[in-house]
Amino acid sequence: MKSNYDILGNHIRLIDTRNRESITDRVLGINIDKFFMPSVANVIGTDLSKYKLITKGKFACNPMHVGRDERLPVALYDEDTPALVSPAYFMFEVIDDSLLNEDYLMMWFRRPEFDRICWLHTDGSVRGGITWDDICRLELPIPPIEKQLEIVNSYKAITERIALKQKINDNLEATLSALYKEFFTITSSDELPFGWRVAPFSDIAAITMGQSPQGDDCNNNGVGEPLLNGPTEFGFYSPSPMQWTTNGKKHCVEGDLLFCVRGSTTGRMNWANQSYAIGRGLAAIHHKSDCTLNWFVKAMIDNSLQEILSAATGSTFPNVGKDLLNGFQVIIPDDNSLREFGVKGHSIFSMISNNAKEIDVLVGLQRTLLSKLTI
Image 1 (cartoon, rainbow, N blue to C red):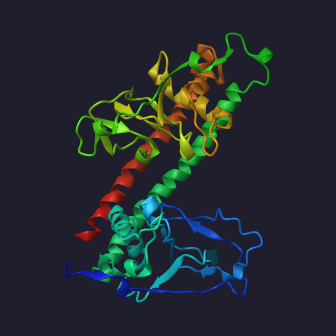
Image 2 (image 1 turned 90 degrees about the vertical axis):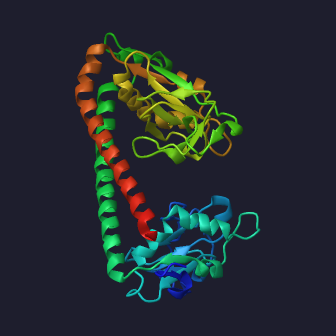
Image 3 (image 1 turned 60 degrees about the horizontal axis):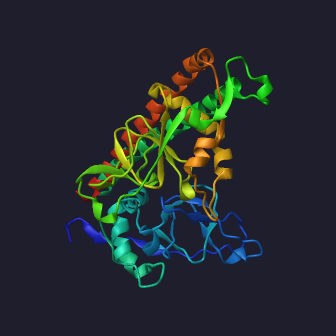
């Protein structure tokens, strides 16, 4: 153990405060990205007095699915109003915040290496749980509190910048959507202006459905061409490959719109920042004749996304096939109308893109900061 390392159990303790006085009925879970979220469990008729009452500055974690998800869902509660978590969760707090800062500890929990170590400690059950004793035996670096606070403040500054850019983009995307509908929403084909037409999406866009290479042709060592399999590689604007292949089957090119076509993340999108081999979870889409109008193709998809998802097949999660993407109906304007819309639309899209690119850079800085916690 390095000189500034200590076992986690010396700095945290379990707490078990129950909702016996019915203080709240708001039940939260924890997602694999380590944030609290509204619980998906059906608690109608459940005795909530048995649930644990979490307050600001306390941690909770779900120890039951670590082997399955390869992550320990753990989060720091930062709201002023108390909430409830499952009785099966571990709820704990820092013993002495003059030795270990709670935000610094949460940063440590966000490191991929922390999840890898937790996964190695899981038991032999189907889903693979982790015990409290195993969590307490984990080691972490504990520099002087002044150094911890310096690291935390740097991380928070980046996080706040990301949140600001996300909020700006949410507003810009709503503006672009409203602008698109203002220009192109027609209630009847009889109302179409001269030169406009209703046509299948395939009339304006070319679609390449991904095809996964054989497992033996894939590697994590950078050999061959970068391979994208789905949204796990997505950033806010462009992806970062985690795998490579020596035998790519289908490809996207720089500037293509990447569209998730399988599973719970169907409909998520990113922009290709280079050529990639693409697996079966993705489709690559671009304007048939003018790649500078790829952003307009995305606006068309955004406007029809709920329609596409509703028509998708799949008993649990939607799967979008090529025929569905090719066949959904869009309004294709004449060139003059598109240019008129493009002056406003492309300006907004450019601002969204620049913000998303900055967020990707900021997320990279966050990862770098987390990686340096062991130094």
